[in-house]
Every structure is written in C-alpha cells, then in structure tokens.
Length: 187
Image 1 (cartoon, rainbow, N blue to C red):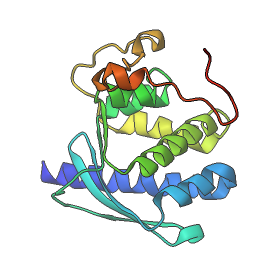
Image 2: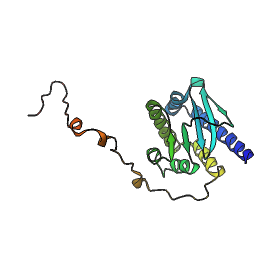
Image 3: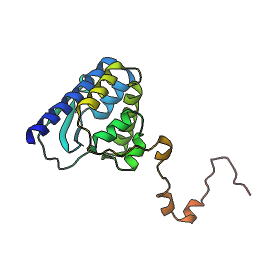
Image 4: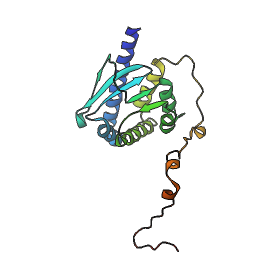
C-alpha cells in the first residue's frame, strides 16, 4: 500500500510540474496569475488522502518543488479526484464545490481570490489548449476512481445559499442609509 501511495505522490508531482510547464509555454494572463498567486509560497495538498507539500520558487522562472512522503500539519487544499473530474468537466463550479465542502481551501482572503481567478483562467484555457486537455485526460484515465460515485447535480441545482452572515447583523444597522456626498437624503 505504501508503494502505491508513493507512486501516486510521484504521479501527482509530475502532473503539477506539467501544468506549470504548459502554462509557462502558453504565457499570457494565466501564466501571470499563476506566478502572482503561488510564487514564494508553500502549500499542503491532499488528493484522495495522497499528501504533498508543494513549494513554488523563482518568480517568473517559477519552479515547483514537492516533498513526500509527508504528514502535513495543515492542509491548504483538500479534495477528491471525483470532485476535480466534475470541475474540469464543467459539471461542478468551483464556488459550489467550496460551499458544499467538496473542496477545502485554507488561505488568506487575498490568496483565495487569486486562487479562484487562477482556477477560472486555467479551466477557460482548457477549451482551446490541447496540452491542458491532454493533461486532464491523462489524469482522468490514470488516477483511480472512487468505488461508488454519486451523480453530479446539474449546474442549476448547485446554487450556494447566501445570506447567513447578513442575518446576523442587527436590523437597526441594516436600516442605516448612506448617501453620497452632495446628495440630500430623501425626505
């Protein structure tokens, strides 16, 4: 079992490095987003229980280094392969996956917004980049499938529920009206 885990860690490392190289060659805004989002940072990732510590160094000459086997004290990204398959295939939005806790992300708000932008750009690029499509196809073919997959919800049914935080704000605070300078309040 440990040998199988080591093989999966090595495969995951290779795919991450391939992703970086594909984006480097493609260039453009997605590459710039990747560099801005990950350069100089370290993250713990967990995919189906396979854990890696990933470190990105080098700015524009971005290099990805991984460490395994590791026991991570904290995980910044945790999900299952089936969730990634659904997101890559357009059957699940990143927002819905995070809201339903199918994808766990732990980072500062600024980093989370950058990650969201980066993932959106990578998925959009997949529509016209054959190397990305090949990478996704290889992942889909080679990474083990869950024993029993539950059917995905249609995009219309993935709407996250919002408003829980606003319900915690007192009504008198919500009733405050603020007018731009120079405008008189309506009488």
